[in-house]
Every structure is written in structure tokens, then in C-alpha cells.
Length: 584
Image 1 (tube, helix red, strand yellow):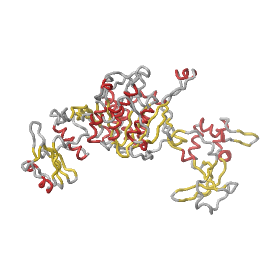
Image 2 (tube, rainbow, N blue to C red; image 1 turned 180 degrees about the vertical axis):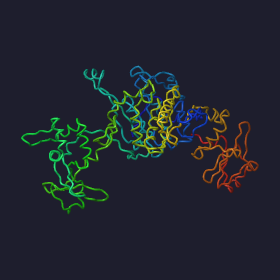
Image 3 (cartoon, rainbow, N blue to C red; image 1 turned 60 degrees about the vertical axis):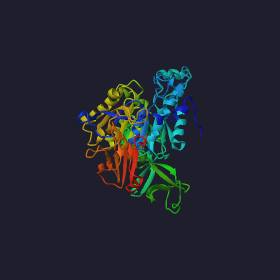
Image 4 (cartoon, rainbow, N blue to C red; image 1 turned 90 degrees about the vertical axis):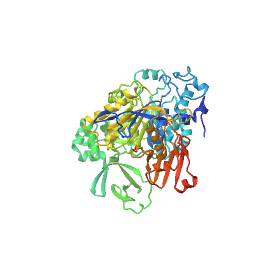
């Protein structure tokens, strides 16, 4: 498989392992009912302020392999974004980059190297957090799309690649018209790379629809004889003979003609009427189950002996499906496709009800949202915001109601806004985790989420689940000091929480009834015998502390004096502090 090389690659491919694990310091909780509060909400919704590389590392004990969907919108590396490379990689060439704003093409000959060095360890950690069936969406433009594709193939595997979505983010107007007339090809699209960890291509839990013009192939009309039998005539003939009000409306629009008492209506004008007349669209939608198109039959197996005739359509039931079948003038079996299957609410800017087509990898029309982006949740944000509809469509298509969604380049908080909207729509319990490096994490990112929650709360749409809650965190101290001993400045409760997560991958509940007891998972009992100011020993005296029974005992301490035979007989597993504490 082709790979990409760049300055510093050999130093960053394993850098995620060197990133210190920092504890998350809870700053406040927020609920729809109480507003800000000191106690955690326990909702699972998190907004974290801090370097996303370190924050991602801090999520590993609780979330490794649990995140169902990731959306990120990293710097596009256009040279105009003002981002800086600040990862603490111990390499002379890379250290020269620290604190320097990445420049434009031609001015900064290492701009792509810096971007790749920044992205690689973050993608490694995102891969660890993603569940086996999890999906990651990455917005990007042509400055780094090609490079990103290669390193994503390297980290996630080529078989995990699903597709590249092409998103129409601007229209050709204003300065772009002038640019085009000078002979330039105007850029109005961006990309979203889509990967799924297990490589299963069937990622769509819900189908997205695009608005569609009238397809003139749907030119036939079925007049019902009984439940399963229909007489077939042309749609224009049906309108002329049976829909006098509709016909008169089309005559008024000059889309139907009358000459000496005879009326004509072309398929071309039917399509035009659908585009210009609300009244005609209503007629089409009302009768869409009887408007059909001619199509071939993909398989004739079991159909050869059916009694069919030209001009009569029969509904045939086969293998839990129904088919509308007839014969043409050449005595060939043909099927009829129903227009009604194309009538839906489109996932477009106006949520238009009407004729639609299933969306593929071309996602058009998002430029229409850009004029409203600044108004979303009344949040001013100078950096390039993504329209809420775009992220909402991605998550609607790919997530279930209990999924965990992560955005490690959170910006203004659009991902959380989208998750809350979806939960309101389907009464879901999706959780969101946002990470934002910049100082506006509280004043803009979290503030937007508060406004969204308050808005729904005022309209009484926030229900009893956790949709109206989140917790705000700052990155705290490293759990281990430079000598890889436990950092004594870290609260013992944070250390206990880390040990529990590393052992069980389940939420930690502080045990107040017994010293050193962490908890019980299935039939395993966990103890963490630790004191900041003295060494601890697992001996027969320490066993007096064990008040709970289980099939296995996992006990952490600084030393162990118990005989190996005794430990084996009683299913005791000793783990030495700090040597045997799991590092992520």
C-alpha cells in the first residue's frame, strides 16, 4: 500500500503514546432546570477545554472503543487560518515550529509537514476511541485532502474507507463570477472523508433525500378495476378525461392546448407544470400511487406463466414483495414503477415536500445555509462555521438514538447543537463530547449549547432524559510525574477513577463504605491500597480490609508479602503501584 513521508513523520507516528494522561477537572454542570451547578450532571455530555491531543488521551480509559461517530473539522491549512503547531515532540526540526503561525504556500515550505505532524497522533487516538462499527467524518478541502486520504488509509486501513462526500459550500456569484470570466475554474466544493472501522459499507441507518424535478418517464396512470388489477392509460389522457379542474388550470397556464374541442397535453409540459404550479404539485402528490413509469423486469424466474395482457396491470405478490406487471405490444413482461415511492420530505434547505431522489455522495445546496450560519443559536464565530444542517444530516444518516458522538475540533459547538436537535426529533439519548483548544471554549462553545438548551426548554421540548444537560471540564494535572510515579498533586479520587476505568471500562461510583474498595464488576472485586505519604503493602493484615466476596480479587499496592501459593489458591491478583497501572 502506498504511504506518505514527510519531515518529522518518524517522530509522530508513536507520539500519541508519549502524550501524558491528564485528569479532567470538572468546572460546572449545566441543566435546563437549574442552569449552572457545581455538581456533575452525570449526563455523559461533555465539553472539554484544552489541547485536543491531551484531551483525547484523557478520554481513553472511559471511552476507548466506545465512540460510535466522530465528526471533525480540522484546519484546512489554507495559510489564512492562523493555526500554530504546538505539540511537544522531542525533535530539533519540529521544535523550531513551536509557536509559529503556519504560513501560506510558497512562504512556508514546511506547512504540509506541520499539518501532517499535527493530524497524525490525533487520528491515532481517534481510531482508538472509535468503536468497531464506529464511523468518522472529516471535513477538508483540496489543500490537504490528498494527504489526509493517504494517512487515513495508513491509520484506519484502506478497507475502512467508505467514500468521499462532495459538499457544495458556495455558489458562483460575486467575485467568483469575475474570477470565472478570467478563465479560472471556480472552487465551490469541499470534501468529507468517511471511514468505518470495520469497513462495513452499509453505514446509512436513515436515507437522505434530494429534491428532484419531475421525471417525464412517469407518464402513465393506473385506473383501478379491483384491489390487484388496473387499467392503464397515459397520464395526459387521464387528466384530459377525468380531471377537469386540473385541465382548466393547465389551460390557464398555457401548458395544455385546446383546438376545436380537442385537448393536448405533452409530458414536457406536465414536468413544467410540476415546477411552476403548487396546485398541480398537489394533484401529483395526491395521485402519486397511481402515476407510474415503464421499466424492464430484472428477473423472469417464476413469472413466465403469468396471464398478463397489454393495457392491464396486475399486482403480483412474490417473496414478500409486490410487483406491478403487464405485457407490451411485443408480448414481453414489463413492470411499473410507482411515483409515490419518490414523494418524501427532502433533506434540503427548505425541507421541501415533493418528488425526491436518494442522495449519494454529491451533497448539494449547503451554500444556502451559509447566510444563516451566523444566526444559528445567535452565536458569533469568526472562524469558518459549518452549517448545522450538514452535521445534522451526517448524524441523522449514520447514528442510532443511544450513540456517543465526538468532535475534537469543536469550534462554536455545532455538533452538540445537531445532537440536541436529533434527540428532540426522535426522543433519542445520544451523547456528545466536544473538545476545544481555544479560550472561547466556555464563552462561545459552551454558551451556544446553553442557549440551545434554554431555547428548547422554553418551548417545553426538553424531556426527562439528559438532552438538557452537560458538564464543562478543563484539562488538569498529569496522572504520572516525570519519573512515571503517581503524581501526588492529583486527587486520590481521580486516581481511583482511572484505575477503575482501566480495569472495567465502566463508570466509576465512589465507594464510601469501605477503605480502598473500588467496586465489584461481575464476580471480580477491586481494591486500590494507596496512600500518598507512605508505602502500602498487601499482606495478611491488609486482607482484613477485604469485606466483599467474589470469585477473583484484583488488589493494587506498593508491595506484596503474600505467598504465591496462597494468592493462587484464593484467586488474588496483585498489581504493583505504579508499575502495573495501565498506561493508555
